[in-house]
Structures are given as structure tokens and as C-alpha cells.
Length: 178
Image 1 (cartoon, one colour):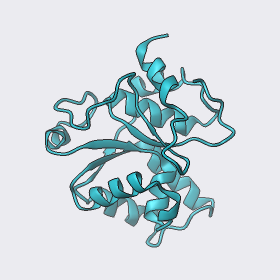
Image 2 (image 1 turned 180 degrees about the horizontal axis):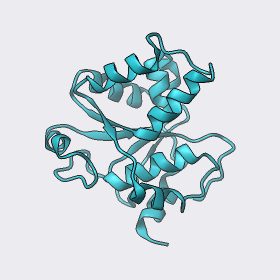
Image 3 (image 1 turned 120 degrees about the horizontal axis):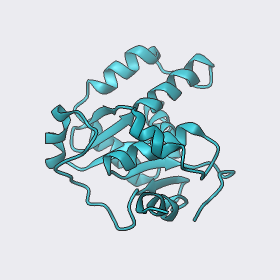
């Protein structure tokens, strides 16, 4: 199996203490600052030389957005706070927005101003940027088998595609491949 899959195998299940898994897509520790990131809009890659960057999973973002901060590790909470202050860049995969929109529509979560206003406000902050979804990400995602959640696979594949660490919440029933 190639290195991108070994990296995911190694890191899925590495717990930060509260169920939030910091997932790296490489075997060695990733540097936090990157100068060139394939697959991201050119307008955002310049910021990566100035600040650390991560990719978020759906649940950590929901918990932060809905003030359920006790569900986040101290490290993840601090990173979201730094993104709010423009000190860190958090990429939000398109599929994370999709999943949050679905969860709100189904009544599973409630965003104070509704999905449209919330997502616009989030992306208006310096520390948050959308990470698009494309065929290269789908090609990676369909090869992952750590659980049956297509959103988790797409999020991990997005992080691998842009070569950044991500905040993952993997359910206890997820099939571990490490």
C-alpha cells in the first residue's frame, strides 16, 4: 500500500485525550507551515507561509460553532480560537459544510443564524478557508476503509490531498486499520 494510506493507517486512533484524533496523512510528523499546497486556491497559499494550517472534521467544527467546547481537546479548542483571531488557518472541506447543512436540515443541530449566514460568516474570518472537493479527493477517499462514513473518508482524503494534518473525530464503532 502506498505511503498516503500507511500514514492514515498509522494515525487513525491517535487520541488527544477527549476523542478528537489529530490525523496526519504522512508517516512522519508534518510541519505546520507549508509554502506550496497543491489543490488550494492560489489566493490562500500565500497565507500558509505565515501561519500554521489544519483541516477540520465536521464534529469539532460543530462543537466549536455551537459552544460545546468541553467536547474538544484543549489543543483543538486553542487552535479554533487562534483561527478566530487569524493566527492559524483552518481549512473546512466542502463536504464538512455539506454534512453540517444536512444535520441542520434534519434538526440534529441548530446554528443560531442558520446554515447560510453561519457559513458565510465563518468564511469571512481570516482564519477559515474552504477546501474544495474534486475527483482527486474522491479517488483517495474510496480507498479508505477505517469506517463506513463517507464524510470521514472525504475529509481525511482532503487533508491528504492538501498535505495537512486534520482534526478527526472517529466513532468508537469505526473499523481501525492500525
